[in-house]
Image (tube, rainbow, N blue to C red):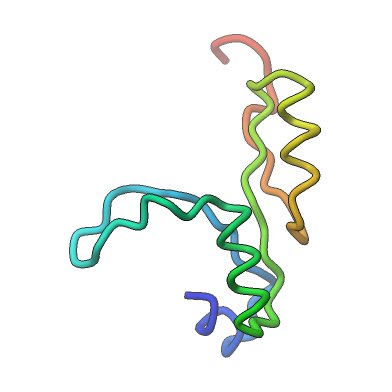
Length: 82
């Protein structure tokens, strides 16, 4: 996916664990931080992003922001059930 994003000149690629694949194996031991580091070492030149959920504590959010992502896709911008 990273090479495709790079080839098509997309702004970036958001990395997430996602759902179980239908036709491939599951990568259980690769978190977002590890995936970003791996792709950078592999020479990927596309911007790499991560999800940032505001449902966690401030400490967890700040810890996530220390990841070497180029951008973040923020989830849970509102409070409550709405």
